[in-house]
Image (tube, rainbow, N blue to C red):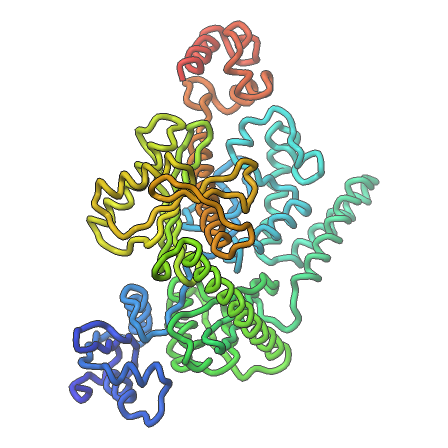
Length: 595
């Protein structure tokens, strides 16, 4: 079986007797690498169990080792082999977005696909790191962070201007050129060019002092002091300009890789990852598999600093360098400050495993308590919860969240934009979402829940049971979660498929799990609804009227104190605004009343 393999580079797949893929690996020499599994006297238990089941080997030849590296990660991601160490990461990394297409750009949180022509800074390890940085940016440079729809509708400065965190470009309290200069300084800071920024601010402070403009000089002095304070809290001695520091820990049935992020010489914080199928693997194996998969879809920094050596480090570094515009080096056996950073990452990985162990023990207790609370004969393996969110019937969105024994399964969350339903009809909205979810399950297969939670009362539960009955879906238990009279946690009513309601003690772990799932569905629905609503409002009703450009729109909003005032105004009142003649005033009045 092994002797027939090529000696060239490529990817190999171990298959069992039923042709299921057990393991995917890459190799510079396919025959030598695949054969090594059968010649090793000692292996990790995970690999020993795999080798005992191998019935066939498939290979794919590649031109280079770098191509083998890329193909291996694509196959691991798509096939999810049982014996590969899998990076479970269901969230993309967040960025800071500078909306350069707007005449007054804004800084904002961004996660997801990046659009050409916009400026992105990051990636950051967490949403918290992005928000902390945005908070710093508001204090330092006062570049706006409000939504464009909010910006367009302002007729007077908001609270951010009053507390000194914005220059109110929405109402013309800063010239476009001065605002662009603030944006340029903010960009220098986000690019990590703090030295250039401090030099420039210092020159401006001296220039203002020479002109005896001491008030403006004091502003630059305070900015310089603030930038230096931020540098003192974020800069770390001995780090490279761009580096990721990684360490792994395996114990208590868990494996964790902790990553510290450094960009432009500044610390962006850290993040813990928990790979699957790695509980009996060595830390070196976990770290090697993590590095290989982690950078398959992410930009790699100039240096990757590891707590220990990993297999194929040179191959991975070469492949990453070919994909980047710079050389990538993977290093271990570090000294001095870099060794200290690796030690910090190792301690964080150990602490994360201990914390996760306690968290999972609590979660296991809640699942067992939920089974007991509902009198189920077997544990629930999968719970789904549906919720509906809207604002007086506008932009109705239904959410579906999924939990299993390990907690939320975010990759399987779904949102449903509700269409052709009367505004505010929660029953019809719930019915449409459930119908779409289970019709798709019938057409495509996949998992279905053991327990279906419905955020609502008897009416919503009736819709759920009706949909399941019509589609012939069986073995799904339905439970409604209705808020109590005072809407306080712990007073929820649990409503079964027959409409009978019951309660549980406020301190019951099973009820806590139901509340957690319900609250997550509520959060996910609200986030989707707000996104839909904001996108719908992104285009002002005034923008759709021919002849009303940006300047006239701003004049109207300022004169009447907002869009509501414009809508309520008579044509003769509209005509009193500079730049609005009687014909245009009548056109505006008719268009707004018709919409």
